[in-house]
Length: 260
Image 1 (cartoon, rainbow, N blue to C red):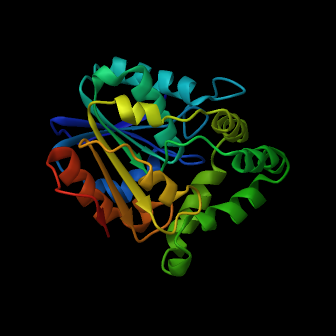
Image 2: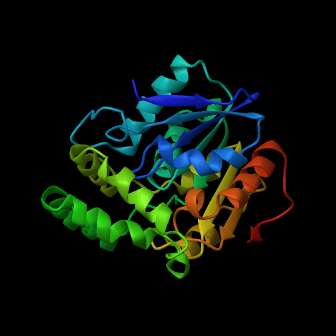
């Protein structure tokens, strides 16, 4: 079973899935601001953190099935699911398979669109670099995921992100890349899901197309989106604001989409 940690004893269960080349340690800053009404279930996805490698390709569906084994083991029903970046892709695959046990899905600096052909080619090319020069891949790529206007302020968090990335098993990184290449469009999941859908984005995010993601959301009353003044890593760049939004949206309600 996947490695996981539990924090808090709130009445609302929030399952948290990290992104590519991350692990459950990324949530530390965000966790501080989350309501005591939450019990946090932080999971290491396959091939990341302390979780084992399951296959040569970790599809989003495979990862969702492994997450389900954890939630079943913990006997979770009617819980909230939040995923950062790749964790958001896994969350959508989970919501497609098991919508009846979810209260909400939060796409945390993530998107429901599949990779376009250009992005797929970039990922395919990255496979060789990951195999042959993983430290270079991490060193070159990780800083680009942060707000370029605040890299001096965020230097400590950038270094932490690099450290966590470098601790990820090489085979796990490759399996995740292959899984992301083959993932499919999940807009239909948003259209059909009856629970709360929360979308948080950063206007300086170089990893996803924020404008495309926010402007093409289904027009449903259960969907809220927010665009923050940060890059791809709101949990490190804007943890206080992110926590406030999560607390308010998942435990209460805000009146409209907002830009921070």
